[in-house]
Image 1 (cartoon, rainbow, N blue to C red):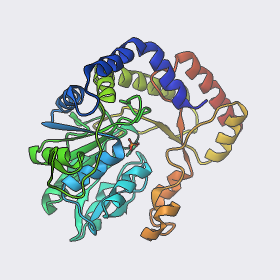
Image 2 (cartoon, rainbow, N blue to C red):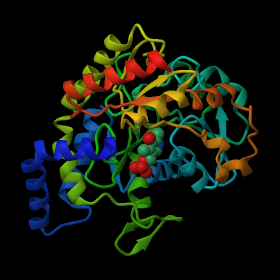
Image 3 (spheres, helix red, strand yellow):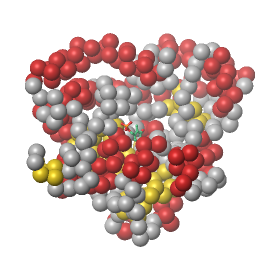
Image 4 (tube, helix red, strand yellow):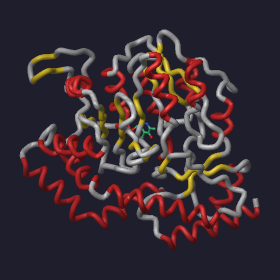
Length: 369
Ligand SMILES: *Cc1c(COP(=O)(O)O)cnc(C)c1O
């Protein structure tokens, strides 16, 4: 069984009454799409981020697509981001017809190397898209300086960083818009697909509301193209409202699991996650690094332990994106990392006994590989 299945099934057993009450309430309400639960969730989610507006959408990829469109990114434009990310970050840029322009990542925290961004800006750059990868934030101060200097908006990809903090600010509150995914494994996950965009701008929010609804101003009038159908449904919104109230607890569990790994693995040659200065990490994934990664993963399989890699193939070297022309070696840190990183089990319902058992196996494998 995959970690994903365990994680969600245990949570469901713990929270079943609340989840079923949410579903039943929506089914009995007579309103299944864009009703009161979506509106309430949007308000509560935006408020948690201290940002004026929230717009629920159908998934994180479309949150990025609609946000890019609402920020004015048009076909032929360039969007600066990283290749060490989940593919959908780049898929979204591609979907709006813009060209992803990659900068490399830091060797120590695996996040966007913001010092490389200025050199990547051209007259066609219309958006900076930092990815708060694995659960901690990109160094935002220098990025915001560039954003102001060149008048280019920032869209934060927060799909892995619900509730992450950066010098006291919360992920999603530091740009012109932020996109979230509520895919079930995420730090705040729905029971199906879901996503949201938050933004301080009433104008961008109004744009997003039209874009997710065929480009319509009201039921009869298309005022914007291309429109989408990218609505968040009531059931997922109501479940998310309830889970949002438990988000502190989910994050605390993830941090406690990370602290136990840090203690139990400190004396091994595994490179543990480095939390950048000013960051509070929420550990969507617990990424570690080792030069003999593949041998370690093979050995672990003999113990029935199957670990994930986030991500084994950098996006710029994937078949579908080779047409962008990023040669092997063009992003050396990203490419090196891809061969050395892997993820330790991390989900709130992982018990201490299970974690201890896993740690024993891992220590054994590390000592003999
Ligand atoms: C999950 C994820 C997305 C896409 O979200 P979906 O809801 O799966 O479409 C985008 N960016 C990052 C960094 C992600 O981890």
